[in-house]
Image 1 (cartoon, one colour):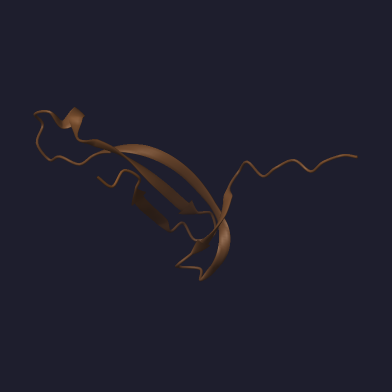
Image 2 (cartoon, one colour; image 1 turned 120 degrees about the vertical axis):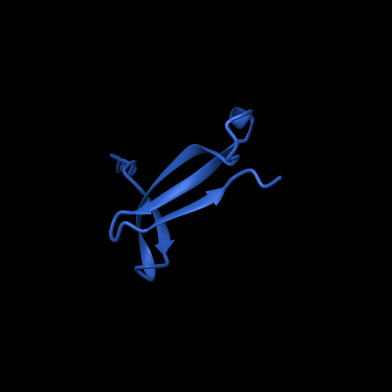
Length: 66
């Protein structure tokens, strides 16, 4: 029996702009939270960034809430 390939192009999530579930591209990026140049490499935190492929709305969430 053949299986269907998984959809690796996006993740189904609720979009606040579209007000329905749509496909999103999801990535993790490191963002510097300190505005000071000195020791800024120690203030990087991972953020989950989700972009709706229908309307382009982008939402971010800090993944490390310390």
